[in-house]
Amino acid sequence: MTNDLNFITNSLFDKVTYDGSADNWHFSFADKIGISVSGFWRLLEKNHIVLVSLDHGHKFGLTEPLDLKEEIKNRLTAKKIIKIVVNKDTADLILTFTDQFKLEIYIASSNYETYDFSINNKRYIGLGSGSIAIMEIV
Image (cartoon, rainbow, N blue to C red; front, side, top):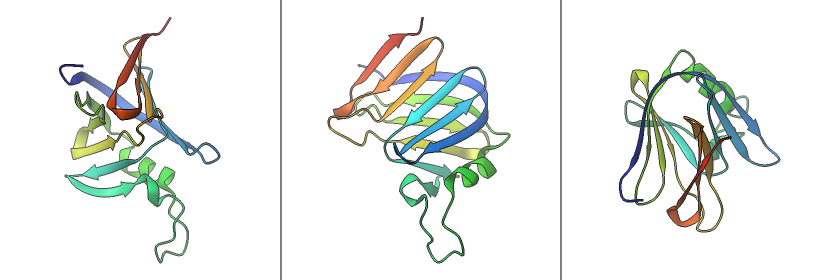
């Protein structure tokens, strides 16, 4: 890849699910955009870290363990994803939302796939060591 991949969209956040047995997160948006993540991600608001995937289920002195599904739902409901960027050097994925939110997904292995997302009838897979595979969706 010689340039960052950039996608401009205006797609409303729909939901997030988590499969604890596979340690996999799935973010759904309108317009058939979906992102599955099995690696490290973090949510920023106004360029400050507010949620980190590794914190899911920890208590941190709270009365209940942190439920990132609910936290994400509370923060991203009614927000639109307006830009998706795949970094040309690392294949890290950055999603920009309205109201100054960003979701950063980092390649978390030198060998395993970290994320898989679909947009515009193509599937993009973040591979180990910062490569990306691109496939047509039939």
